[in-house]
Image 1 (spheres, rainbow, N blue to C red):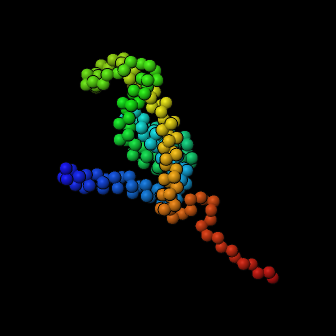
Image 2: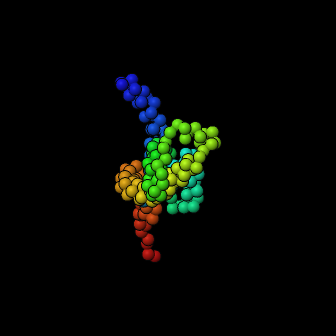
Image 3: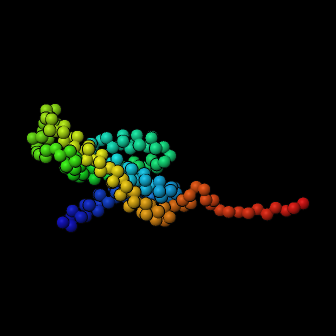
Length: 184
């Protein structure tokens, strides 16, 4: 057990530091608005949980293009990257939620069904299950995004205050200097 923990500390923690924590600190040091960061983080995480693997980057790119300056693109992409483990672990709950919504039959997850998908001989049940997964995510996504926004807003407010070198509001001056004028 000690060997596993030692390997975890030597391999995984430095990787998380380089791929997640360092980019987040750079984002925070640039002094972005906490509301925009919370919205962008919630959007990236929600789109990152889309149940079709490999599509999330394109969804985030499309959302960034549509929202423009209303979202912080690096935060959206970083949150999308961080959501990958959740994406994989939530496929079955989204499937079951979609089945519950439609009242459809319970799809049996078996190696036989997986083999049919890989070999291209997928039955109608597999296509129905894909529909159920997408429906489950589509119904849950607004609630997930709202919950993440509510959770991330206080976190980003504290982190921006702690790491930011610039004021959080672009309309606030850095320094107020009054220059005296002489009357002639």
